[in-house]
Image (cartoon, rainbow, N blue to C red; front, side):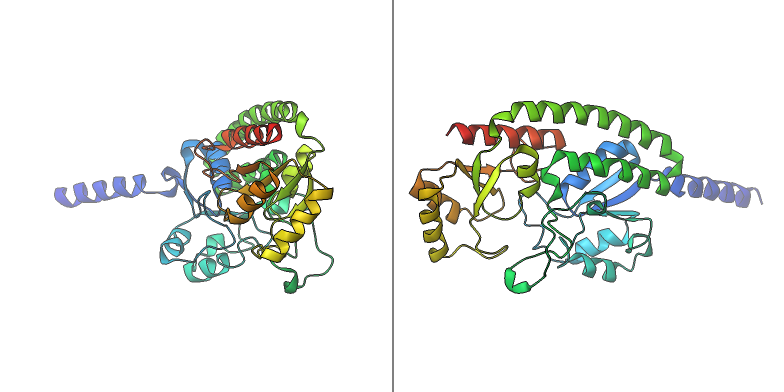
Length: 303
């Protein structure tokens, strides 16, 4: 009997240690920027996995078994939404069979729902290329959008993990204070960029350009998601003769052949931006992401 009581007591203690109140909240982030934001807000109360890196195109991800397993064990899924992950996220959700993170569940969070989307098409036609019906989903290139997402994300963490709700609120306040100061600094440093005409590789920079006042005058892709053809590049050369650009901007994960050709042909600086965390060696967190972005743009402006 004594042995039985000792066994039952030990089993009870083990179960107590394994209860959800002691476990970290498992977070699956579709993109590195949301993984980083969740880490800022969650601290040691969350365990975070990022499905993609800064050197991957978030449109073109394979729904691998390893990702399905990660979603299956997640308490919170954070993605951009606005159809950015339309080619792979639905498969992960279906195959994982995890009711906690399905659309409409408290564990399903889409950042784009909290941001005014730009470039919302009046007509969706796949002949136009990779067009998103809800609007341009690349919201993370404007730090003000990160701020817009931070508060509802902290609130969602508190809903899923009320025991640490106060800690999430405190981290939100601390992050918001530091982030607001950083945005003011970036805007001051980037003032010379206002009005500068740029060529961009993909329609992924409208939020950044809107924030900093850069003018997009041409695109290396003739249509979103369609690689530049020789004919299109020749048209760009002609355009730039009468309407010159100060720099050519592309994301670190994009093919560099078209941007290098145009840069060398027209003697326009090519600026490779991180686009998200991990896109460059310097962009290791949210603050470094925009430090590096602004610094690279200013170097490009100086030629």
